[in-house]
Image (cartoon, rainbow, N blue to C red; front, side, top):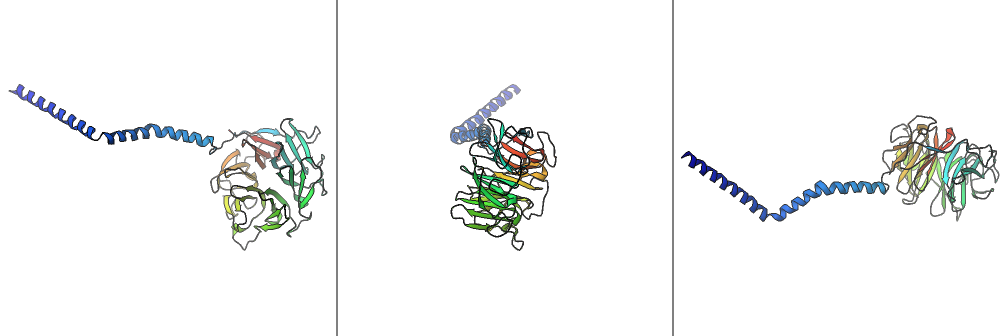
Length: 376
């Protein structure tokens, strides 16, 4: 009797299992489309999405969203690099710029001259000024030049302590006076210790009139002069400049990027607007420091066509990189407030430029050398 009951229970369990399986199979058959879609979504989520994400990251890096440089500098010019086989070498380099001939041009404010470095010949060549480094105020002399700007075969020189802008060519040893009277002043035709120059696409040059705390615009076609962002503490802070030391024109935004040395910030001024916006630093110009968003003293800036800004934070012994306006900076060369002579350190970096590959060239001024930081 017990055996029969056991067999009966076994048959019932078997029937129940078959019934459950049948119901499950029936559900699958009646909902096969929905289940198939769900499986496809699972496969995409688990397998395909990570692959796409990894590809996207790679593409972003290749498209220069992520920029990296070797933190160890290579010395390409130092005191052992002689000028035209003489016993002269570089002094204090205040600006670096690649010329139309592909050579690197150096503004030597200590020895009052413009020289270039020929990469093929590994040599320094005198472009303007004197071999012995004497200063002067005539058409072939300079007095503490601070910046240059190229426009085709023309070279514009910021002759700071002569309070003027000169124009010449690479092959000429004579220059013409473009702007300024040669005497310090604050009229619309005068300059006071100009520091930097840049040029827009409409034949306007812009001058960082450092001693007058203003930006001077001069049109090369009609000789018209305009004054912008003049110092006025009765106005809002974002309507005037303080110690503008470095200028770059950004064509994509039709704006000037301005480094304010003792204003402790870098700003963007859209041409002809009444106010500027902050790129990095202290908006009030009252804060300096060592954080990722502050500076101790700005000596030079440079920009690329991707809205990236490079800043020589010279007192902090570092080069800061800002990927867009209002972001936190990243130190790409130097060690904060650590002066030194090894390949990782600076002693007052005060000029910056980069080549077509975006490898960086830095004037390590107190070490009297030019350092190359190769892009990775």
